[in-house]
Length: 267
Length: 267
Image (cartoon, rainbow over all chains, first blue to last red; front, side, top):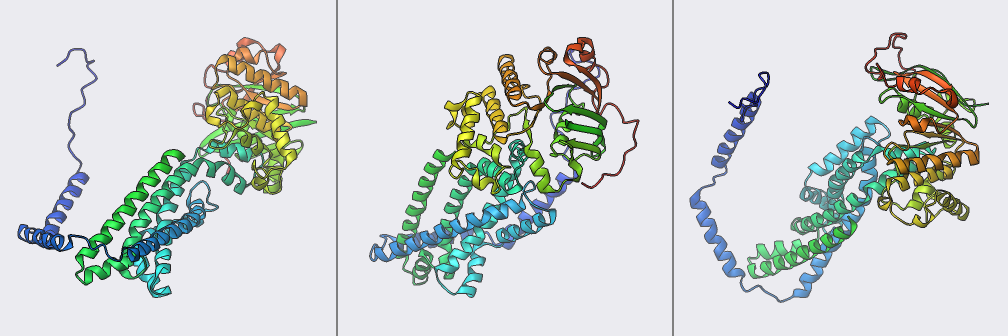
């Protein structure tokens, strides 16, 4: 024992016994995991068989089929359109949603609860399900895709915007209120400028996210390059499918580079 | 005529009784220095005077208009007459210095923010803003971002904002507490100059007793939510001022004895 310690102070223990709650959660999770592995039939034998099938797929996919690239380029362009239009509308609509949902800008608690519930609903329903719903509502094609992206973007962006708005330092808002400004002027003059950088970053990320989901939306008939991919896979044209995947990869990576450049300049 | 009349004002934050029957009158054109230890209720009093925090009982009259009976638009009109200078400057970051000064006119314009943005403001408004900025000696910084300014310069911008506001009363809540001694003195000199030029009424809190002995017409001392010292500056003894910081100064240290807690009055 080091003698310097005063008699009343004892060293804190290195480890502490986990509480009953932690034990319960850990055991429950472990049980669920083991049961899940058994139920989903993850076996080594099937993994090996899967790897062989994957080998066949790759073997038939090479060399990629580069014919009709212009058709692919156009449907990729359509996917890009769906993503850009959907995110733009979604981000614009997110701002009022976020203002109504943030504690410091919401006019009344009940408005805040309802808005938060709406945002949560939009976020909880996956984009693919939104696409299925809108395909039923407005028919096959890119419009269903755009609407699905709008919903998905609001669910995501409005939540982040409202959290950022709640973090805004109250001082500048107080200062503008003290000049006799109305509520909307305070929001527009003090709160929005302070959140602009973070909102831009969130919006850029939304575009990246929307681009990826716009690809999969095509699988359920909501327009874009996903339609081509689904058709190629069903007809076992794996070489064509590989081309499509490569095109998607190039565009998505290209956009991520672009958006990180923009982000660097904004923040 | 008195600019500010405070009669027997009480204010609670939850169960904390902050202002305890405070009474204070300030004639038009007088400069009052308010002293008191941290937590004695100074800032709360400041916030009550322009209605940023509603008081519970008693009466606060600004130019003979009672704050508690005003409708929201009338309250906003009254706030225009009361300029506030904050300890933390409270400028809006991410917009230019010039825009921050223009914000001072928010309450005067019928369209609020829409007619005070630097791109939409009228020529007269823009010229007035530039004149205010020139008065505090920062005309050359009009287009700078607030981040580039030193603390003293930011406080100058905040003063320019209250000049733009055309206030009749200036409430300064520890305006120099986060500045170094030299910058602090400069700000006090500037504030007092501007005030005497325009014949404004001032209520300014300070922590530096030696500064209190040099500025203003009258010294008011607060202790635990009430006024305990009120003398002309020349007659104020240093020992009396020092006594303000001794003993039970904070409102949470001293249970309120004289009054029982009354239910909040709706305002």
